[in-house]
Image (tube, rainbow, N blue to C red):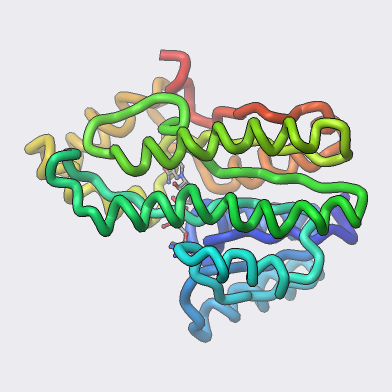
Length: 256
Ligand code: NAD
């Protein structure tokens, strides 16, 4: 059980982050939910998780595109035994037309945020005598696809940073790993279907079948619950010697 541990999950009012928050809470961890918004429904998510699982769940607003807010999130959380860097955005355009502001935002949110939160969280993990850093990278942290230059660069960067954090904590009871999901049908994936239709001149059905699930030999989307279960496993004693590596949850994508 993860009772007594606090898990901070960045970008967790939706999709994979929210799925991980639920699985962490079901495993007994107190959870901090985060996004850049501060709406009633954001706080309601935390209240629902607390009500259903009995753990303490809080929503803390912080914009993961801003370094100081990333660090503030960890400070406001108080404890941070489990850090899950999940916040991420996507943009699909050929590199010569890729909007500079989209490049900057993707690098900031998908990669730099993990640097800032990890820097702020490690002293807390060391003080507590236990810690887990879990970065939600992607199959695109290990392989590439056209039209996703910023995303692929950021995710490869996160995989590299994960290895460095693992080496710097290797002789401590702290591990750092990256989960590399294949396609999971979340709002992030939904949102890239229109631009992908345009880049490939395909229908929606063709994009799902011939672009997305072509890469996924299982021909099925992975689920947010599976990402949550993998994160919970990485917090178990069985995973104490798993550090500095990637776990693919991608239906065979990276075996191709
Ligand atoms: P999503 O859009 O459902 O979730 C993204 C989350 O990040 C949301 O909670 C959103 O509010 C938050 N977020 C966005 N910008 C933020 C900011 N500036 N500050 C704080 N929070 C912010 O998408 P998802 O598919 O659940 O993606 C979650 C992570 O999983 C991302 O890092 C993504 O790259 C990764 N991933 C997703 C897939 C997939 O197929 N869905 C595959 C591989 C990796």
